[in-house]
Length: 266
Ligand code: DGL
Image (cartoon, rainbow, N blue to C red; front, side, top):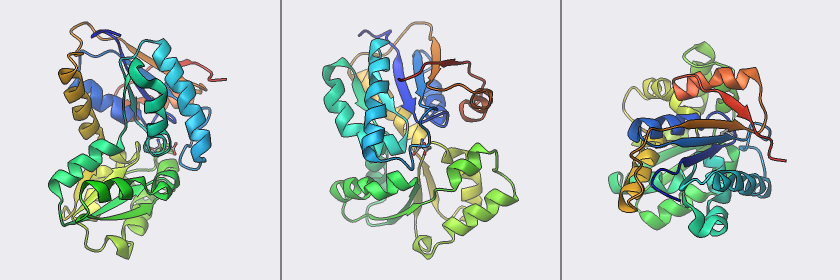
């Protein structure tokens, strides 16, 4: 592993490219290897054991490619497999999830306040945000809600229209969110509906998107470990199953097209 080694980023599919985009913006000299487990998505409805098995396979691929850091871009995988992957990978690479950086960010800004959380069923049912927030700052009241329709809705291109407006209003109109000060977007796809969520709350609630927070955590780590790259970056995008529609979606999540290479896990 050296300064010029790539950053490995993985997700259940293409949605984690929102995190890859934020990392590319914050660290333009870093090479990236992105792995989307498109053969097994969605992770949001899978068991913890299944996600752990997929995550270990993907970590092997990223380690074989010499990645100095593995970023678990997926909230569902972060909730199911972060502790396991840290144990598994050990000194071979540093592992960063998307939950701890957000918990640190919220606990530094929202002491004594009410904070909503939306995510997949796997993320919400794991209770991991609640447990970690409780440890970081018990004065924060975290209010979690599973919003499983949002991922398929976004993947089908339904955002900034009447359907997304109705689905978002139905979920966020839940009385649970009546008096929140901030809302955590606990899923790779939700940055795409950030503006609609902001409109729903009429700017009254701070919308917390983890992509920039995770990129900042990665940057801090690379600086402290003296692992910042100073070379020309390269980008590689691997998927466990290839379709043209996955490739077409890369533009939406990564803000530019990405050429996907098929890399079956089994
Ligand atoms: N990437 C997942 C997450 O952030 C959402 C998509 C899925 O369920 O696989 O939780």
